[in-house]
Length: 206
Image (cartoon, rainbow, N blue to C red; front, side):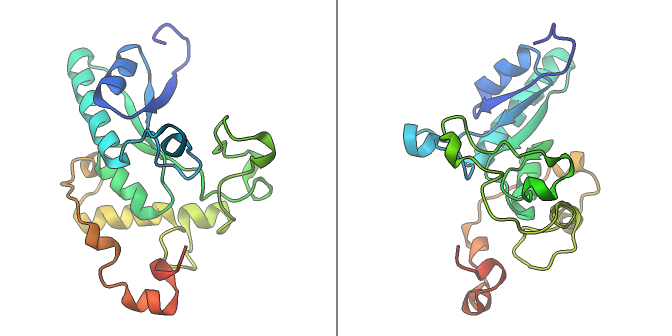
């Protein structure tokens, strides 16, 4: 890859060793994630998958070693399971430079250029493939920069990331990548009784 005239991004890795190997072969960026995506069949078919936060953190470690060895910075892209602003913020805090999203974008008729997301894996029968993995939540502009009509975290993704960074006291993505991260499962349910009772926001079923 190092000899190619254009930057190459490769993916499908979820471990320190795999990420480091791809970086050493000259990849400009690595897509990190196996199993967490909505359309991914690896966990169900093969029984293989790695928690996304762990995979990104391991790739971040590989990036640091590769940078020390070569002076070349390789971008880490979290690929899989990204659908809310909180998902994106956590991926960046774990060390990702960017994220790959497949579910949130609207159908191609509402997307510039009519491009598709490419979210469905090749193993999926062609007759089942479609644009994205869920119904349209809003226009591309609403999904990325708002305004958000719902408080479930699936609209205004960029605004959510900025607010998360500001709340934690970070001004840039590079600084946010150094944030302290901890496991707190209760954050998913704590204080959500009223939302669940009303079936709104993050308390909505499904």
